[in-house]
Length: 82
Image: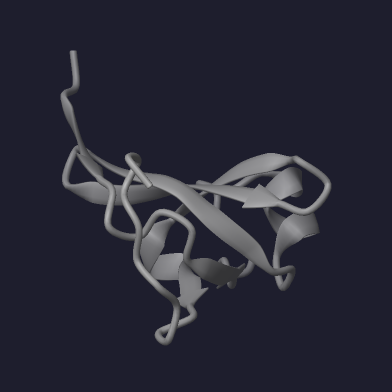
């Protein structure tokens, strides 16, 4: 069983997914939402990699590796309590 650790400070930050072309880790839905603006709902670390749950305007949730997201560096950081 793999353990994971939550990273909440990025919750609510605007991101634009930029997954690498033809990456076998990603599916068609990842590429469909690539380039669209979304917001991070949460980030978890699984097996040493950070995976972000990203929500989009149409309420779709898509997962991306944090390293494949362009973060809005000026965005306010929040936690689950806010």
